Every structure is written in C-alpha cells, then in structure tokens.
Image 1 (cartoon, one colour):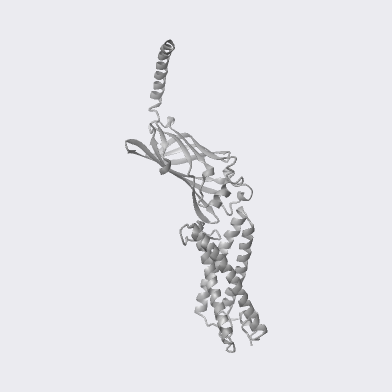
Image 2 (cartoon, each protein chain N blue to C red):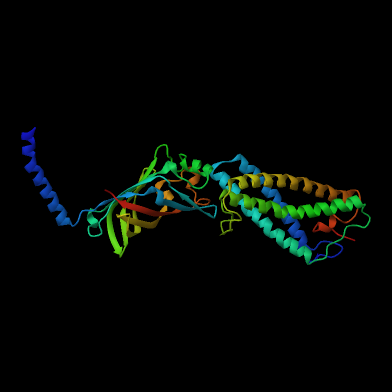
Length: 199
Length: 183
C-alpha cells in the first residue's frame, strides 16, 4: 500500500500542476452556488380567456457556477419539477398535468441548460442554451441580472430575469389546446433566485 | 314608435333593452348548462362566453335603469286589485335586482376563484375580491340560487303579462311589443 501511494504521489502532484495550469490559462475557477429554495421563485404568467393569471413552479433545482472574470467556465442548469406546478387553482393544475398539456406522467421535468453565458452590461448577462419541455428541445436566450452581496460571511448572488416562451413550440397543448383562442401561446417565465456560494 | 316612453306605452329604447336582456338571459342559461356537461378547453370557452355575456347584461342593466329613471313609466291599469298591483310591483323590482345581482355574484365568484373576468377577451375587468375559496363556494351557491329565483320570477312576470292580455284584456303586454297597435 505504502509503495503504491509512493508511486501515486508524484502523479497526483503532476495532475494538480496540470489542472492549476489549465485554470490559470482560463482565468479563475468558477465557484459553484447553491439555490436557497425558500427565497427563490420561478413563476409563469399566462393569459386564459382574456384574463391574466400567475402560476409558479415551487420545486426546481439550479446548478450554477459563476465567475465574472471567467464566463467560459461558468455554468447554468435549471431543472424544473413540472408535476409540482401551481397555477393558483387545483382543478387547473390537474388539467395542466394531463397528457394534452404538460403530460407529466411521461415528461416530469423541464430543463434549461446554458451553453454560453455572455456579459451584456454591468451586472447584466445572457445565457444562451437549450430548453427542454415535454421532450421538445428549443434554443433559448435568457437575459438575467446578478447582484452580489455578502450575507453572514458568505458570498450571495441574486439572479433575476424573465423570458418569453411559446407553449406550442414545446407541444404544450395538443388536441383542443392547440388553439390559442382561449389560452394564449405566449407564457412569460420570471425568476428571482437567491444563490449562496457553496462550501 | 317613439324612442322615449310615453304614459301609454314603452318607447323603442326601453323595448329594445327589455327584449335584448331576455335573449341574453336565455343565452346565459344555455351557456351555463352546457358548460356543466363539458370539461377542458370546451368548458373553459363556454364559461368565458357566459362571463362576457353576464358583464354585457350588467352594463345593459345600468343603461336600462338609468333610462327608466329619466323617462315616464307607463302606469299600471287603475282597475288592478291591490294584490295584483303588489305582485306586479314586487315582480318588476325583483327582476331589476336580479339582473344586477346575478352578474355581480358571478363576477365575485370568478374573482374569489382567482380567475379574472374578461369581456370577450377585449379587456380585463378588475377583481372584485381577492382569492378566497370559501367565498367562491358561497358565491357559487348564491349565483345558482339567484338563477333559479330569476327563473321563478320571470315565469311569474310572463304569466302576469299573459293574464293582462287574455284575461284582463288591457294594453299592458302590447305596450312592450314593438309591432302592436295601441288604441
């Protein structure tokens, strides 16, 4: 055992050196942040029969690593538990879960994965990537802002933004629901996230 | 036929409002009963139409009441017995109350459920109350009870009109009919 460790130690040191070199070449490493679910919201606004309604997704996960000086190493992935949706009305929630709408039995999750994060202004960014809802993948650009703070000695980021999506692009609306006469195609998704530096 | 009411008969505006509201109330019953048989999108559409027509009735009721207040009201025949006079006045007052109360309870019901009311998708009306499930349930029962009450009072109104025409042989029914001659 000792001999094997003895052999591994120089290899490990070499690997660390190589990693450090890669990080140095690409700038600082992007630290990861954990979602504070209690102080984060993911909401959606929709129009039903001419009336404006609000709903939210109470259960979602965020995988976020971010360094302002190394956006290439930054990463964002949001996974939404569609079945947990809350449109403000239980009967409507049940309808939304049905096969003709979100079909949660077959597609329980939606996911946004950013392929690239670019800075658009001070504190303003755009994540471009792909959104998968109901098994359908579409390219999506999501503008967002970040505000950093230090709370209880930990770096915290507040991420807010909104993006307009069209439900029919993802097949959310089969049969009768393909019509936009009573339920609009456009859905505004808004997010307000509190992200705490991990570790 | 005159636009304004006279002491002998209802004018064209009063008649138009009366018969339009009759037609819209019948439409409301058909929309409400068919919505109960449906689900999903079809139910949503039927209820949206029911709400739009209901708001239309509420607006027409306002116009109608205002028009009544600034116009002469053709009086009831002097030959009526006191109970007939009471019944006629009670029925008319109840009908006026109901054409306001039904749309308003429906509107409160929608607001309490958290479904904003829109008028034919052209504009959204303000919510009368904040979301409140027990209030929604109470309003749903009230709305339904008022609908049955309207049915009963409207039947009484119809029977009264027919009694005037066929039994009392006066002009009370004819003065609300657009093409009838009144001596």
